[in-house]
Length: 217
Image 1: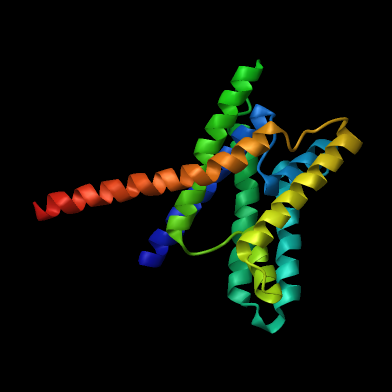
Image 2: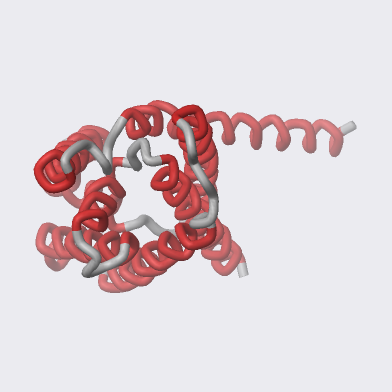
């Protein structure tokens, strides 16, 4: 029963995170590093949707994990990652459809939507962390590379975040005539999301402390 609740919380977090990504694309000021490449490619080609390109990137990330870990790779974990990754891709498309009718007519409104995106995305990621049952392929790939190379996980993550941003920027400049997948909003997200997750943790800790005080009062 506990496992069901954990996966339920994770899936809710997954949906909320997908909604945060949808708001970032609506803002038009750039998306998170991992989503920037699929988003840029979706603007270049209608062969797949944004969520479809996210799914393809997830397959590549899972393949890298399998190649790196070999026999140490856990089949059950890979299957769960694959399922969750495809769910996330389809949820992202669904979330984009949900807010398709919203209008963003000015730069201040773009900033407002970007702020909403950060708040929502951070909350979704926080819920996933609280679920504590799985990792999406991008983070799991970073972990696998860290395991094989001995590099710190944080170092690997920063490297790939920068890598995705550079690739997205190059794609935008070469094929789209300018930066599309990454802009100032990507920098805002990089700074804000981690701080917002810490803020949510502090709020939960305060609520927990108050409940304990009332219980012992």
